[in-house]
Image 1 (cartoon, rainbow, N blue to C red):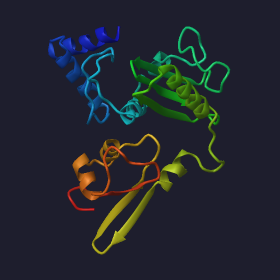
Image 2 (image 1 turned 60 degrees about the vertical axis):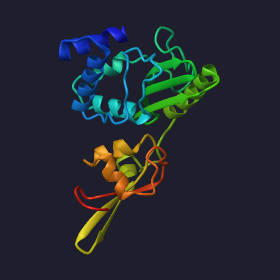
Image 3 (image 1 turned 90 degrees about the vertical axis):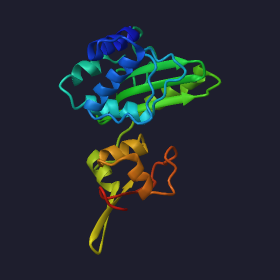
Image 4 (image 1 turned 120 degrees about the horizontal axis):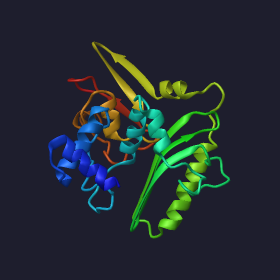
Length: 232
């Protein structure tokens, strides 16, 4: 089914149902709603091709952008619900049952679970777990279940809602004739997503943070956000 949708998008967008045309159509649609596509390689619609590449941050960005659209309710309803035998038959009798909706992915050595969960205080949390090179996808799915249940049971400290957490992640420093921002990395971030959020390219972010490894940023790490067209 996913492959048919994929090929139909290519046919509608370019008049061709080839994998190349279909991948361009998907990329155009996601770019239009603000999903950063750097580093994404899509060879098919089913997700079975070993050469497919994406990041957890890209999946989280898809959920964030879809939540801003008029079709959000339909999109949410389309995701399999945890704790139901006919949908996502996992995480029974946990906080995730009835509160987590996600899509799975499994090929040899790879297991994934990406979706959205309602926490104890009804906050919506987007998440993506991608496990590569795992010797046991069964064990990997147990880890995914534990993470999903823990997220559903999560509750923020009173008085520290999402806005307070976001504001605490920023620091502005002002010097003679210039200003710069620093950003503290949060769970689910990657460098491409942060750059896109500030209207920057990945190259500009790397030049402002020369000691940062682009694929190894850590939660809690501070990054310099340069002024557009300037230095750091």
